[in-house]
Length: 404
Image 1 (cartoon, rainbow, N blue to C red):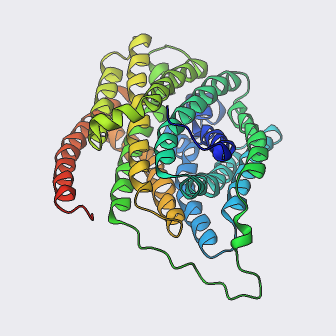
Image 2: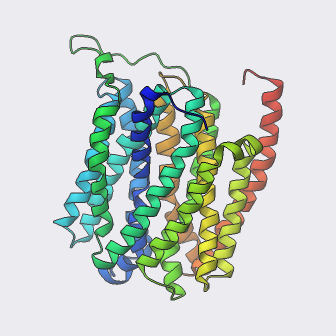
């Protein structure tokens, strides 16, 4: 197994711990059905889904802000990460004291989205800046095993806590406190490279983003639109079949993330075999998983198999895209690239998922989650065909023009 240099191991583990909280919605989406049916019944399912997934949109907005602030030396990358972690921790504290009104859920989502925007893309940028190429490939694959492990913990424990108190998922974000301490001591202090107040503040001359950064960001956008349909509808899907409450949904999320862990561990080998066609494979597996959810809704074991397959896709497509992006950036544009790839693309994709697919499928096929899953499954299969041929075309172009 490839090893990271000893002096960078603490930073690597801090990065892994940060990514374990990268998808806090897994602690929250298990309670969507409960929020809709019992806590805030006056609000529609689409409204509940949209508010819970609002951080996915805000992470794009504040990711842009964080990238601009770091580029113009208004804030260091280190302080951006620390600020994001502090907002996570605060989002874990406030619900203990205020949790009776729907506007408070909106407030929590705003805080969470702001924190994610300042935290996730800049943390990835720090990783790009401080590790060598082989280390980045190793970390990119293993990172998503930690993302998945974090989601398992958040999903199971969040589901159990939500069974007792509906805002229990938010309380789990207090886990950001020890990670904040790790980040404080491990992330290099780049503030010393910032100009003094007496100096004229100008942006660093940034290398133009490679066109492939936009391509892989577009793939992340599309994938997260499809992938998010899974957990935003899972609690309702299982409830329709009388298979359980938020706790069972938490277990299902854990199974899904187990698939992500295994795929993340084996990412290096899979990537060497399939290269960019691993992206095609991911969309095919989405189709398979959604189809099983449709055809075998009433069988819990089948639902678990389906979400396991879907979970595998996250740890294949995103690490591959991230590694490809990392090879096309430098320290002058890494924050901008990761803002686009890690914030805007997946954030907007995840946010628009419910708005587009829930409303569209309700108009076409009613409230059925079976129809919703299969509908998105067929679209995933269509994208798989397109990406297969487009990847072959791109491979031929790059072979003919190595500089691209």
